Length: 289
Image 1: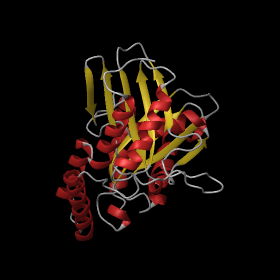
Image 2: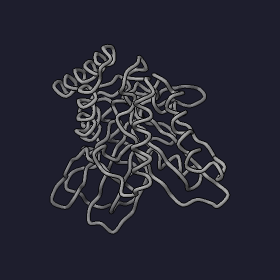
Image 3: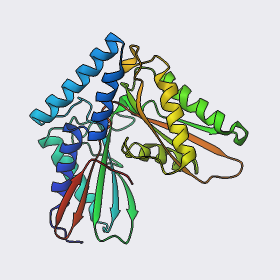
Image 4: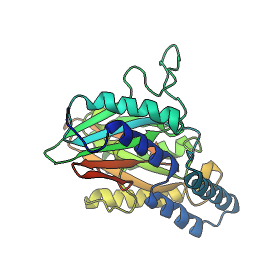
């Protein structure tokens, strides 16, 4: 077992508390900016209610949304096989102590174990590297937004226009169900499973980070303008703020394939990361995998 300066179980509890009670700074700034340009009275009121809720959640240390989601973990750096069990124990403790709503159920019997565990839980993605630290990132994902995930295996002839159309249609068809204003994660390329994973990972990219790929950056900007010009607005009630940002990742794909996935994050797109070194633990919400 790799010895760390702080038990992984404690780190996971702290991460889940941070992610669920404090909105990442870049998302908070995006909400404030949206309130500044919003002219629709109902939309402005909705944004005000969201921001008031965020402030109260941080002040009292309680989750900002009743749906505390399913915690999706990413582990990067140095680790061994014991880390899965230690993360699971942290989830169990966090569910009882924060508290978090027990969301995980058997998909068929719908039986709830009461601890946010169960078969296949928690979800952990492993990224081994030669770094001298262990980094644990959590993305709590609620059902309202997760249920709006869409995957398409487009024809390569559909091109960029087809990709853009699919993304726009996916967000607008979702309407108010994912609790907009949303953050839109997009995966393009790879295989079907890789594409879906990239779309979710894209939600971890801070909104104030510039996409290093100029083509993807232009797509993000164009989609941001188009979606906010749709009139859908906060909670689907109308207005100029449908999305807070669009984040896109891509991977090479088969010459006969063009996978595209949209994974939407609600206004409470929560994330937190802990980098564990021999001399201590550093927590952050400015995550980029």
